[in-house]
Image (tube, rainbow, N blue to C red; front, side, top):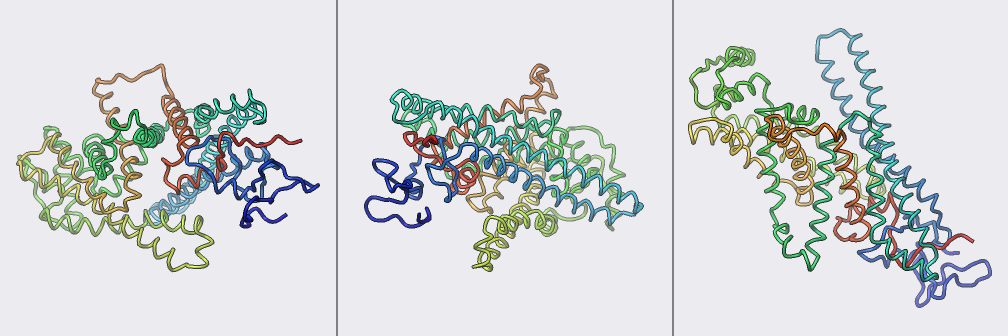
Length: 496
């Protein structure tokens, strides 16, 4: 038997025959041919994307096992990689401290143990999600049976429209494997945003809802979303950090580049409260070699933000410092995928792939540094223009910060804007709940699991039915994990 990847012969393909030389179907087609003719919209009754697995040797158990293993590998790989870089960063910080060596060693070992636990949990989460989805999908598809039976063919065609939706919803609660008491509100909202984007793309294609979804085709909609998100996120960073997720708050505190006592001073003047830490701010600047005397009757906080520097000089100096902080963030983001995804091409054209990775690192680092430095630039400009500082001014001044997203590559803009939008929504509703406009619900303790399950149902339904609404790189990953979908009429044969 020739390998499935071989080019099909002209006319009728005879790649697959049984031991007696008879064709397996009235119009035999090889596995290569089946994969090449996949439509853009199809059901999730899929085969593994292994070229070595022919159609008649299709094994549902193997597909479930492979999906589980691949899901575990992705979850553990992503979480483990992030944990590794976090451990290295903490270790470097500890080396700069003057604490005892034994305490540092104990803390490092605790970090490693926690990182291993988190890696295993996220691996089990995604592995269980993938295995559950494929299992439910296969169980429903098996009930449909062989396509030569008219009733089963009708049943199969009907279930093909909704079984991925059901399978995605049932697989959603696997999030609980990361910890029964661990809330994942940010992740759930982000996945909901991804589901909304896919649903809107389906709506744009629809004749019934196309005119309603037309505004979603705005070419700079991603930048607008980023501006909207920045207004909430950066306002919360200055005025109410407790409304932000812990890890995201740490990220902003690092790249925001301002000490908490400076943020407290800005917060007090924006909220109209009397100053309580002007002396602490003066001592902070004195420790950096800047002799500063702050006016307790000031109307704008520019001297608090950047001391004796002018607003323009502060923007330039902050930009340089922010770029140095951003480089270590994006270096692994570009180089690790280059080593994993493009490992084969890396041997053939290393300079091209590594060059693109370094260029992407430089570009994304410029985006993040410009984003952070322009946040202070815009707020200073607005404060000086209106000669006042209050909460609406902070929100207005942080809105144009999102324009920095234009520096990023077009294909990455929507990802970044949706990521930030998810955190902005979470922060906004937390702030509304804290002031009493949205009383928190005590009945639904794991709303994040419910939102995540609904979102994954929508995403997997789109993956099964409207594959062309996905970007090719995401579609390739989903196909690799779950298998390449076949048309609803082409169900795998039962083993004899």
